[in-house]
Image (cartoon, rainbow, N blue to C red; front, top):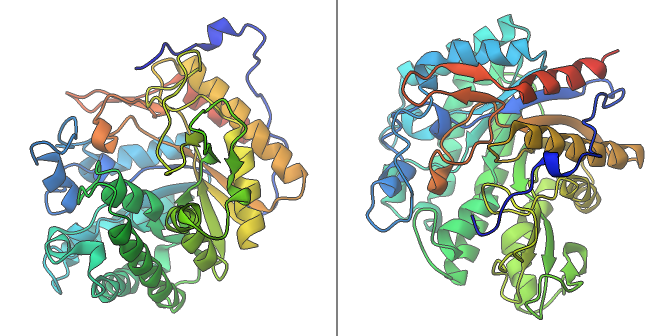
Length: 422
């Protein structure tokens, strides 16, 4: 870490939230995971290949992850024991379609079994169709730079929905496609590992937006009837043309309509927010306030700023800003599909969630239409290029035995959830 992380012990005046207050009818409390981060053995996607590519920068292989392909019943029970309404997870495209046009009935039946079991426990299924990973066969043909991937993704969604649609309660076509593009074509730390390739980023963005728009009517056709949207990484973003993170900077809503800032805004958020205006909801995923330079590059965090294990600023109130922005720019209801913090100090996790939820409550009290909150994440899991070091989970997982152990933050979250129903 670039600077020491302050802990709640340094802030004796902080009091954890004990009540979120009443929630609107239909509200969903939940927690979230992703297939590649928890299932283990997803050897047929671009991320597995990336993890095993020398020089990719990935710290370690996902390997067995948390063995949730086999231990999903334990995970479901953990969600149930927290008193939550819903479980957000993804279905792995590369398992369902291991070769182009070849669909695995066994994989589809596996997901059907776990989704049926969730309903039997009284949990709703919030299903994501693409959470960062793309089958190797698609990546080998250019991935998101090949316009044919729009048809490939739509065919996958069609087959999966035909088999699982009657068990879906909420659907997201993509999880944070802006991160897939930013990290894969500009930052170089996600596959395919391009650096500062703005042209490729623009092409990938256009293809993902097209894939989303093609998939939505397929999902809406059923079987099943459920809200459909996508999720975006929406940090409380500040652009500093002078390169000084301590300056006032330009907020997202003030980005110019022309020039390089406008193009980068479109790649990062604008194109997806525009597409979301026709959706049933907007999934907001916020972790921190992000300070960027004139070329949208991350600025070094001042040494005296409080940071998390991810070296992100410890700024829980960013969530309130993001839901306001998403609501204003899309005009559709908002669901917080991810929010959380990577820390070894579970008291700090409780502080983070308390402050984030307080900011969310303020936004709701000001009239923002928010329909739910999903904590990231249920388990300490594989965190992409960072490996297993960052601990986001409400539940610890032993790396040798896979034993799950709920943390005090899990009990705290369960208490806040229960308080909203009284």
